[in-house]
Length: 117
Length: 110
Image (cartoon, chains in turn purple, cyan):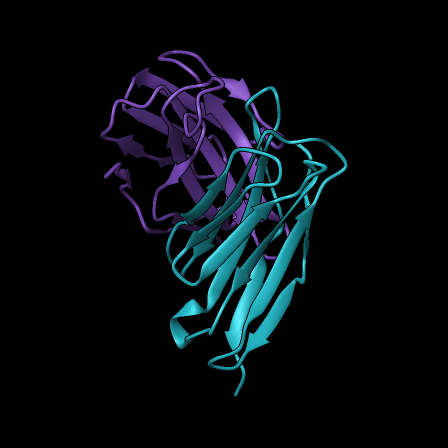
């Protein structure tokens, strides 16, 4: 089974702190994603990456950056955390980007619940 | 990506009931996915649909890919308490990006 591991399940940070959320997948997937989940809003895409050292903005990238130095690891960075970034953050990966059935199916991690005070 | 219209937003189930939820989109999708999220966990894939008209089952779950390619539904038959959670639909467009619905929260009727 593909495993997507988010190292921090629960974090509490103060406004202005720098926050790192780490995500590792163990099945050699090409694509990795960071989503934010808020009640009533579903899953919103922050950033994604189709290859090492490559990143693309999703729908809500403001206030976030990402890093993908190795294929298996995709980090989400909040340079200066704010209270409106209190949320559940979900990392996901998929095999590759293309027409093959199942290639784009996302496997999610368990989530990182961040509270910014 | 666009947000899909998922309904109902929430529902209460009684053990043994059949329940249904659906997603609609203004765009055509090539793939429809249904995920379930248990409290405190990440979403887990339930069913994937790849062809218009496709009807696929996974145990007590049945999902269909609409003929117009703009909608999908998920049925749960003979619901049990562990069916509670949040169910998400997701559609994949020709650019391979996924769009998600806002989720249907299923809880047990007291």
